[in-house]
Length: 217
Ligand code: E4P
Image (cartoon, rainbow, N blue to C red; front, side, top):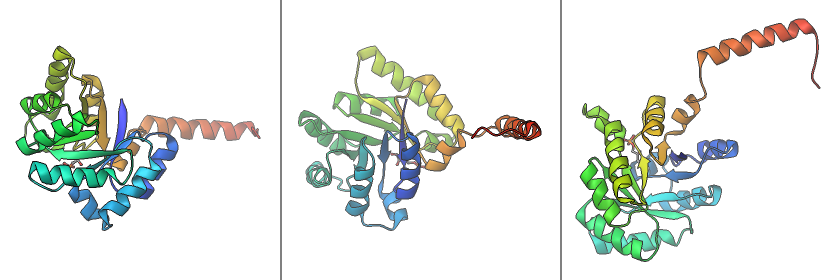
């Protein structure tokens, strides 16, 4: 399973990247606004840091505008993945980019039918937002499961990029139902390493080791 970081925080991305936990990055207009940085500048820095795809989202609502913005964003770096909204206009832009071999991430997906359309339009990634579905008491993981089955039924190569991750259980459940990628806030990825029994076990080992009076180096 690939791990993308859902953030524009360079320090956080770099720290996880140094561990080898970053296969890509996703941003959206809200994340860029939160960073307080210039969009193209911060995305260029992320692209230079990370080898994998970096999603940068268009803001135009019409296909021509999306195509123009997407092409502009692609000038930033070769690993830019153009993020497009799941609208008919966005799907049309997706199909055109797909024919040109340009990587796309179709975002704001909340249903299996939407994901089916994105696959038919050649999306590189589909982003179902599981946390936002859970927020309205719908089952986000069930959506990932449905999309997995549909894509496997027909051999679609669009990768399922589970987005709107809120907690570590989301990541585990996405892995269990076969999401190709998760994109997560950095702190949730870090929390995956935590377990109270690991902490307690380590404290016990260190206490006993002290009794031996030995050193390794
Ligand atoms: C995905 O690409 C989105 O940027 C993101 O996962 C949205 O998550 P949110 O629902 O926490 O805003």
